[in-house]
Image 1 (cartoon, rainbow, N blue to C red):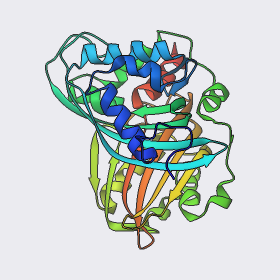
Image 2 (spheres, one colour):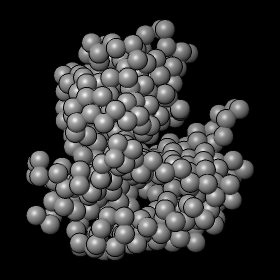
Image 3 (cartoon, rainbow, N blue to C red):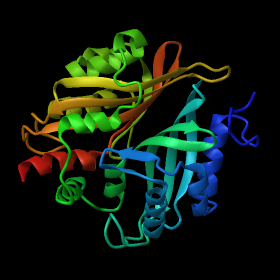
Amino acid sequence: MGLQGFDKRFCDLRDYILTITEEIWEGRGIDLIRHYYSEDCPVKTPAGAFRGVEKVVQGTLATLQEFPDRTLLGEDVIEGGPVSGCYYSSHRILSQMTHMGEGQFGSPTWRSAEVMTIADCLCQNNRIVDEWLVRDQSGLALQLGASPMTLGQALATTADWPDAEALVERWRGAQGDLDIDSLGEVAQRYRDLWQDACLDRLRQGYSRAIDAKVPGGRHLRGLTQLESFWFEMKAAFPAGCYRIHHYLDREEQGMPRRVALRWSLQTRHLGAGRFGQPSGADVVLLGITHAEIVRGQVLREWHLLDEIAIHAQIAHQQR
């Protein structure tokens, strides 16, 4: 039946998202942003938030100035809707680029890099009307020879950081906080891991051949490597309040079951490791996760967090 209220050339939401992304970035159709984003579209990231299509245009131009050859390879679009004429997409992207210009990551290094991004978009009447986006900023920084902690400390000085409640609110949508118990076993397992450090849950529902992408540009294979990621995260942030703000669970013919969730963890920095010595800082992790499930076991997983923004929260409270 096609997309209600969208150009007829788009056969479904996946086609819409992948096509407009290619036209804007690889096709250099920067002006098309004004056609495909609503005039007052809010865009939220762990490092900041803004409203308005002209700021989307400015941000795109700034990124291309720093990485002129940037490509966006759409790995998947997990979709939901329509609900009241609105469609929801969770778009996973692999970007390849060369650091050729001045910008957020300093003077050109001429190094090549790859970085994962997930963008959650609310779409209506042929336009994106709301967006939440997470990029693996620490993975990009490390490939360019930069320190995520140093960049986070610099970011902490650029503006007053919101308090924990405001950061959680940034990540909420119209649905607020979902009832995790009603979402099923996958959502419950993520809550048990992030909120209560129930690390035995990693041996339940995961394939021994798990293939996972995690912050810092790391590609993990097998349960032992996956556990090492969780040990370092839970050592730093042992407990907290885990919330799911949006959840998609898709089963389509010829594809594995795919899950996408946008979530937050309100916690404290209480342990040494990846984020330095324990600071006691109040921290909110703002993340998006994708997972593919085959025969009831998670076979592939992507956890997207902006670790530079986490370092910035810690540094801001130590000023």
